[in-house]
Length: 479
Image 1 (cartoon, rainbow, N blue to C red):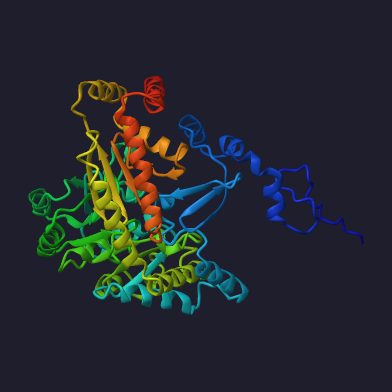
Image 2: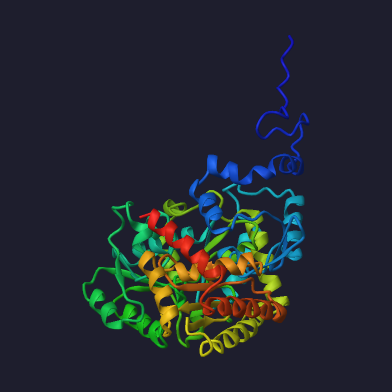
């Protein structure tokens, strides 16, 4: 009996490599990589390429290493965004890269679900060494998943339904974490959400009022908020922790962006003495920029209450959680951080960058504030004093708050080849979260470029304000 052979991929078929039985990724990218923006427009979020074309961010980056990208012409770009904090060690760190080659070559019996592989235990051990008051770890696949786990664990462990969060917080976009997201722009249209309640960051009286109602399981807080780069006031986390424990509630520290060295300590909450969160969420930089991984760290009694019997052994789990590639990446990241003193570099370079930017406040009337810790820095712009600049500022504000910050971000990329981000919608704040491996030359490059852009903005004319008019027209058209 003759059976037909399976058809081989055709070069003319989308995704076909042209070689029977072989997948050639390099050939596929060479053949169709130039279609990147068209493919995204047709099959993914169609608004992303539209936005990138509008602001001139539709670049084609060919390769990357450390804190830098290169385009097809060999032009070098400085990355001050780090993939929203994912690239803590920069791109393609050789140690992390080699660890992934090694784990693939080992052909491990991964994700059998009914054994105990060594890599998750080893990574948990290394993470907990930096978190001596915590005892156990659950591994998932992302920051929002780490938050979801913390919310579930806090509710179950306390037997209470409500979680408090801070205004302007960002904890993720899945339904549970969205319920503790402090920005209406992300929440609108997705109701009903969980019955959680916002309190102002730093307001202990508001926290106490909610706790007195007796139904609060936890407060979840970013020690430094990503939106706007606002730090919890000195003493707030310690006092909040004491209030929470007095009412049999838990403190959850969301360190998804601030953790693993970004603020100059391993965790941002460690800047305040005596703060020992009951649950801590990490992700982003733990991936090494390669394999998604998230982790919820917690106290022993919480985990033992959630996993209280063999019947509950899988009561909270993740299909891809603790996979070998993610665990290997995490172990390599922590090894690099220790061997290359990444946390110390973040502290030193952060202090240098912040001090040099702060020195410009008196020089530029449009520059209102520079704040943050380590390599998480917010640059805020504000209303100028001079009449000519004030009228231009008013024009932008009338169209849409946040346009001036966008006016700064665009020339930083277009003229100086530096990638940055606006810190949030309707905010006149730029957030700097570069890879933790930047050096003094990178700091010099950013400060020189930022100074040039500020000089242009204060000249009262030129291409920058012409672009501002374009942004105004776009903002009005989108109303």
